[in-house]
Length: 137
Image 1 (cartoon, rainbow, N blue to C red):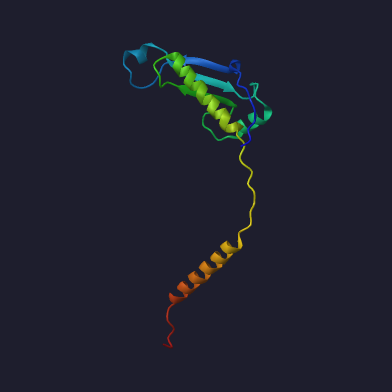
Image 2 (cartoon, one colour; image 1 turned 120 degrees about the vertical axis):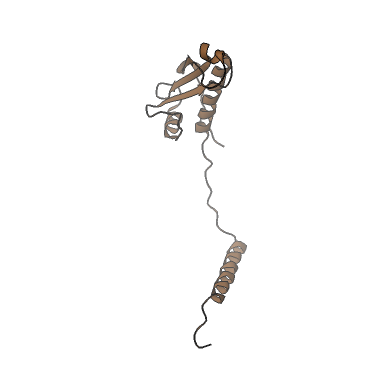
């Protein structure tokens, strides 16, 4: 598969430490271990083709302003959440960088045409048996 080559410059990524949601006891209430990653597509150093493909994606993490927002809170430590958020951003960029395979149009084989016509004939005969009988009989 063809891909758009790119290098993610980590200077384009902004991190913000926030408190995690959900259960976790006092640790959740006192420590800001969750991470919110923000990545501005337009201001990044990505190739223009990748920026266009990224903006065209229907992903809820990409806002209407062109900023990717990813929240990571599954780990108890800030560095691990930061790495998880960065990994999700890389996965999103890789998905956008992978170009779809070009479809090559093919013609049906003579045998498949023959099978199709046989099936149509068989189905027509089956439906003919379902017809309501005429009054003559």
